[in-house]
Image (cartoon, rainbow, N blue to C red; front, top):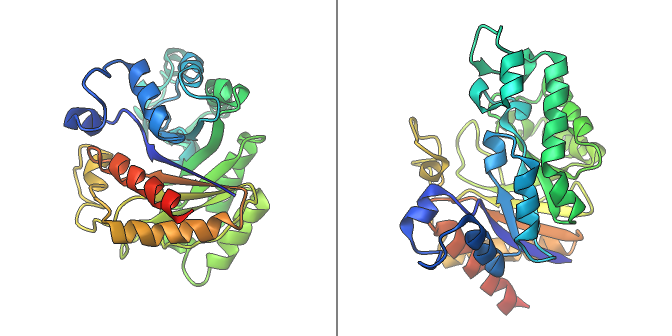
Amino acid sequence: MGILVGTASWTDKTLLACGRFYPKEVKTAEARLRYYASIFPLVEVDSSFYGIPAPANAKLWAERTPEAFTFNVKAFRLFTGHQTDAKVLHKDIQQALAGTSTKTLYYRGMPPEISVELWRRFREAIAPLRLAGKLGLVHFQFPPWLVCNREGHAHVAHCVEQMAGHTMSIEFRHRSWWDDAHRAGTIEFLRKLGAVHTIVDGPQGFANSVPLLAEITNADCALVRLHGRNVDTYNIKGAASAAERFDYDYPDPELREIMMEVVRLAYKVRNTHVIFNNCDEDKGQRNGITFMKMLLAHG
């Protein structure tokens, strides 16, 4: 039974701009990660969703953190089925796709040989973390339009196959996966794949809302992601960043309630990861620190 707590990203623009988490003398990329890792034992790499990182970056991350530190890494958005701008791809891949008629790409429209190469490069990008023993979960956050049907199941299974040998966490954003008719089947599907079901705390009442379903699908790890409970901003149109959508400061009573649920989960699984994704300014960091203090006091 082990509980690791962290936040989604350590360099979010609003976090740096608010000036409240990092001391004034902590100004470089190296200093920020070292400072973050002196407080939290876990972080979720968010930048990998927007573009495949260079292996050299992952090597530096591993070198700049303590031996027991853990990185969860978000999967590249093209793999999950999100629309992707061609300009975020490697230059040679862009050149290979130069004949395509659109700059906005979707996985289903990619030439197979390009898809294979992108998967290879993503695995290569996170390999330094794995070799250092610091890679936790590879997190696949699927879009609201991935529904619970044969095609949806096939794509998720395909992603798991491509990441063989890694532990994947899965987060669905369409309610069809969790309605009464499909909930049990979705959990069983994830168990068969060996994937970690993402236990989500977030706003309810929307088509892309995820119910808080505390189920274990992998004996090695449970993942709890906290998006906040701001119903006014969760699906706001024209948001400049994720920080606007997840602008929420958990009050202590809510944190205590979540903490007790996490403790109950932790008895059922080897490791439990808790990620604060309420990433506006320093809210996630403050809530995460409070959460860890509550865990310590609970014993």
